Image 1 (cartoon, rainbow, N blue to C red):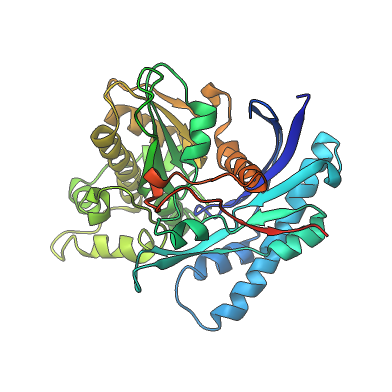
Image 2: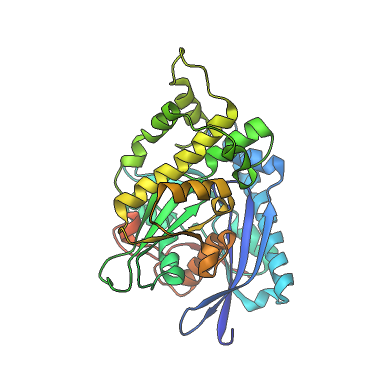
Length: 382
């Protein structure tokens, strides 16, 4: 693209599979975006396990979190270098890197009425290693303004997926699932809405690692061979968060291994525990059903659904979504021009651009913040 500005977006989500990065070009006049390169770096096992452990209380947390942030920044810098090599450009040609960091706690609105959200990041080290301005800590300003700090992607979804005649919903199936509801072009007065709607892959990945020794259930083949357990599914769907009205957000603070074990324990001593494969099938159905319920409750009946994130590559999960939403067209975001694994990273490139131009990055109607806010903190390259 001629007359375009280059930004890099880095995303590592609650799925804890690694870092996705994109090099994106934004046309200066129209803000049209084109992804020029995409790179992925899986988390080394030791780092993944440490990041997962830091989601819970533990010994010497401050020391361990600081070292994990250093390791994360080092891995991020490698992704940035991959992107520059792929496209054949130099660091000085990129205006900024937008780094989401790794969420280890997300408790907005709790404790003192304000709460907090915490993403491990080492913006100073990343700027030092890359020689590019780094923008990070995007969520804190929204929380400071009384918001949830999440989801932040709806504003970006509106830019890249909005403007269609029919209303459209965008489902990000990362570790946690979030929905964006985009009005059709015939209803311009309707605001963009969005909220976290439940677990995406977090519980599925945990169960697959526990019983298969694999990071995830590839394409959902294991869950596809199991039988959904109605009593367990009913217990999962009874989680109060699912019925809470937006604005709302969640994370591994709620949907974690301990939460799942409590649901299994609640089946009662008289009932034998389901086979592991049947639990996996039930977890997949839980993700599909909780998402479908949220969509049917909040979206117009005519809305189509685009799915992004790693869950879009889970064939069994996509089949379950389609079955739970008869009459709704369910497609991958690839069909709208942006592959599923690039969407969130591209969103943080967009958020970095918004910060550098001092434009708001949140949607107050989504997060519940008191108003639009410029999101992020800057670590200059030099």
